[in-house]
Length: 171
Image (tube, rainbow, N blue to C red):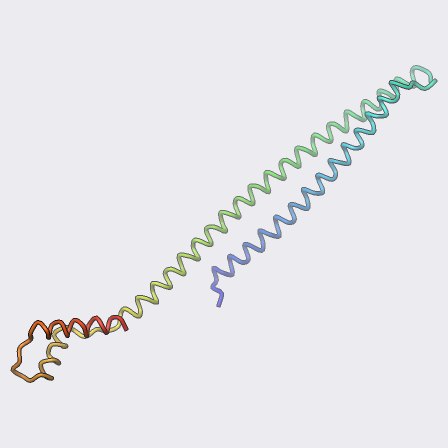
């Protein structure tokens, strides 16, 4: 029968797994966006390089305007790429922190669960060990009754009493 701590542990584990999975999806999406932005930037750089190598018979001012436009677009894409990278790094750091935090909580819950199981085991052992043992004087009195009123206790009698007491404590 699961205890409340087992249930808490299971819920925390399930919640942690769900959170980690969701964050991994976000990271994958951000990485995909970053790849797309890099590809776009590479296309722009290729266009700029092509225009520089194979100038079209266009008026100079149009060519320079096109180059400036492409360079500006490239600069903006670089900025956007850098921002996306920073966001991605922040997300990763956040995920790592959450993972560490949940791992610590999970370890604490497991330690607490182990403690409770140990305490329960000790309580069960102590309940069996706390049987009412007869007092030594009562056992001696019963032994004297069995042997006769005027008999004295010998070393063998004391050993027999100890065996009886130890036998009751082990059952």
